[in-house]
Amino acid sequence: MTIKILKSFSTKLEKQIAYISKDKPQAARNFKKEILERIKELDSMPYKHQKSKYFNSEAIRDLVFKGYVVVYRINENQKAIEVFGFIKYEEKL
Image 1 (cartoon, rainbow, N blue to C red):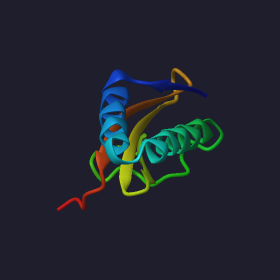
Image 2 (image 1 turned 180 degrees about the vertical axis):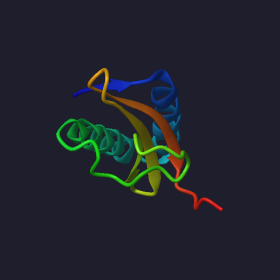
Image 3 (image 1 turned 120 degrees about the vertical axis):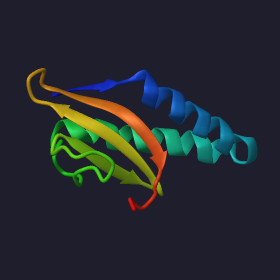
């Protein structure tokens, strides 16, 4: 499967990286590197992570990483994983 990083994810990630880098530039670089590595691992096991708490679909999953949630959609027809959401983890009420 190919991994598509959508603009909605990229924009939110870059804002968070900029915020972290104000105090800890090295931590921001490490955070970005590690989260992108975790996303790259999705191609081999896309259903590894739990069904999303934010959407009612088996094809939408939540990758939890250091208190953040990367939301992605598995598109079987296109053989693609679309990474579109990046949020601070919150319990669904």
